[in-house]
Image (cartoon, rainbow, N blue to C red):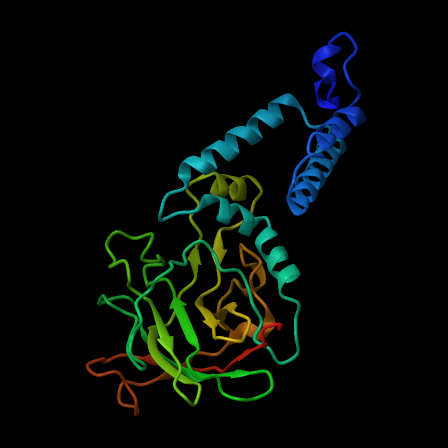
Length: 300
């Protein structure tokens, strides 16, 4: 008789907690895929250990199930509540840290977040990601992609995305074109790149769902420091998903998703409308940022 059926067969003599854990773990012994078997058995062990440690009650278990059910209902093609949950629990950054060990000189990674969209348009070098007036104050971004050993990387792809001045990403905002403030740029033979974006602003993660309720119940705020997202990839190199954070943001030390790393904090330089390089027709302050990205070679 399988061990995990023992509780059913012996209702008058229920299994003690330790035996329930052992039975659940043993139930996965026949899993053909060794990694899947390991992951599930360890999940059972840690999940059961947590329940024993906190002496989880039935009402608390039911509340957790309701929370996760609500999170699932909130997920759409434009919103991923489970990614938000992972981010706000620090799990996303932990996985990033386990996957991407720091390497001297290489651009550091951070969370991708829930607002990245595959297949952003490929835009000409030096063009703008803004497809709508009022998206924000113009910001010119330039630099070079190179390998850790120094050579420029030709044909590297910079996948860029960010929020608008109204604090929303295009995937959140039906009033923005879906491709607003996102795009892909390919480096030339010299590894150089340049594009226009907008100066990012601080914004709250979506807090009108279960994740927001969790933050409110625990006295945490939903704010992220202003940042520009980039995912840099090239043949023969490890892809890096990273942010460039505004040094003036008041949320650098309390990012709701724990994504800030000191090496990713930068200065957006302010310029007047009559300075060289100003965007045509713009009468206000504009900004610039020069930043290189250094990639680690892919393992052979």
